[in-house]
Length: 311
Image (cartoon, rainbow, N blue to C red; front, side):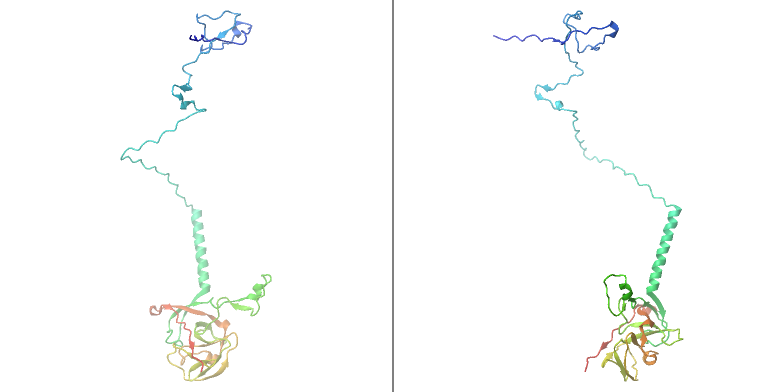
């Protein structure tokens, strides 16, 4: 026995037709005729009877949710936009390079150019003043340093190497700092034995500067016998002296802050053998290099003489 399927039931509205005041006020529920269909005979139900409606589907608006193979990917909830596959590049095909837009060139106005020129000029002036304050040039006159330095030779002199600062005055600005003695100390170091130095003439009224070599340091006991310099009883080996002096100098102890200077040409030099040790304040700086004549270009011949072994 087979069960015969019942015919599709018609849907009826839960309520009957609503009374209307006139034909002009009647609202057409389905002007397109897609949802409320006519009955099988093609006639509308008479007034006063229950209105039956058949839910029809419009083929233009219908999207199947399930097919014969099951759920379709198009039935995913929400809007679904499939990703497009990247196009395959053809053999031998090279895409044209994408040109990047060039940045607009900076326009230098007259005011900006003037500012650059002023800043460059100020920087050059500062550099010049800094170099001028630390490096000075001198011309050798005379033969007191022969053969180490010749007449007319030009030297570059470092005038900051022997600079001193007052640490006691600086300590006033630093809490809980007691630098002790001495109050004045060298930034780098003081004159050393063998340094070629430029010094102001120690004799009052003499405006000429002198170029000499430092021989004795503060605290040294110096004496000269038969032209040989003795420091604390030990002979000083001086390879830069070519013609030794044959004179003598009695023993002298060099006080603090004073230096004994002599020329390399001992037979023709006005130095501490005549005017005695010189104060450190008179020393301008240390010769660092020679730049003229061309045969003398190079470092200044500062040498550190050695003391002979004690007997």
